[in-house]
Length: 292
Image (cartoon, rainbow, N blue to C red; front, side):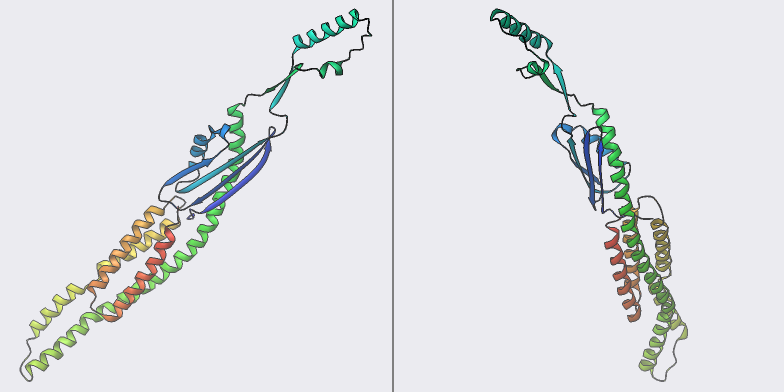
């Protein structure tokens, strides 16, 4: 089933002391174009995300936004400066002894002294963070692809409706086409009779002229190729592979055949049907611009 190039997916998770949010959005584009918005300190995620998203997206202008919040205290480690604490302890006890003061030192009093403790920020493990982000991104990507399928189903129904109309119109043209030569023959006879009055008509010459005309206005080859393109189109939109570019090519070929039919068929009713065909093909062309 075809997929739309328009989509959105989001996931929000708390993992390993970090709150992570991944959002994916895309619009139609001829190729795969990727941009990422990640926190400055996590810039190394950009290329990883680009390759990861490519596994599930073949076409479209894709933007991925990653937000990471560290829970308070989880990215820091408290270290005791033992030498500083020991220095304070020795100095205070020496002063107490020299001044004949009571030694009432406790752990809490030492903790309040400057530089006894040092806050050391943990070094991020890039591989751990990437694995966490990738897990969140996978869920967002699944939702993103699901939305593309939903949009694709609507497009599929619309396109097949237009294809049905095109096939019906081609059938009407095929039924009308033989009458074009017959009409030409009748008009030719009438014109010759008008010009020659009661004189004899050269039947062979008339038949030759009609045969030449029939060859010039024959559209059998064009209608056969047009039906072939329609059949290929139906097969492609039922495929699970990205088919947007192939469909674009087929639409061009369908237009080419219809234009040839219009230029060859010397018949007003067929000309009107050609206009209808071109209108339906244009509606399909507009839809497939957003197919992956």
